[in-house]
Image (cartoon, rainbow, N blue to C red; front, side):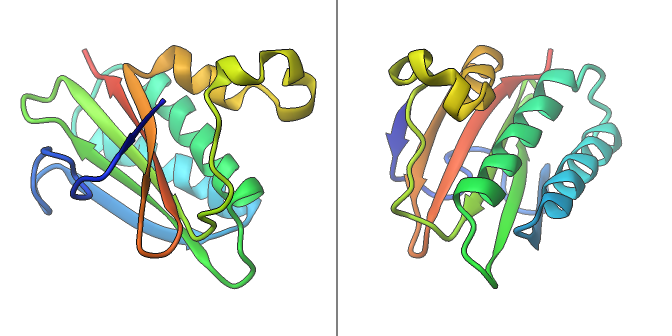
Length: 146
């Protein structure tokens, strides 16, 4: 896991040029909708194999509504298509800064308590991490698209 303090797109394309962002309710339905909207956006961008990115969006959105939920506050999913289209940055932001995800290696012996979400993200992403926001945090992952 890497913690970073950069701009929201971290050196990726600018807004409106390969960027998708949507705020959703912090509910299971919101998490499901995040995955469905992300899949549709990836198809609109012409990405062929989106299975890994779809799973990463689903896991990060599920974590946001399960562990990062603050009643009455939304979460945001953001997709940023990398410059030559060889990677996709997935960002899921919630408003709960004090509950940071741990690297999967720290809790492998407790998978029965915490599930397989972050180990799955670690396995599918080229990199992932957490960055601070003025309110809450953003968990991000970079997934190859080729």
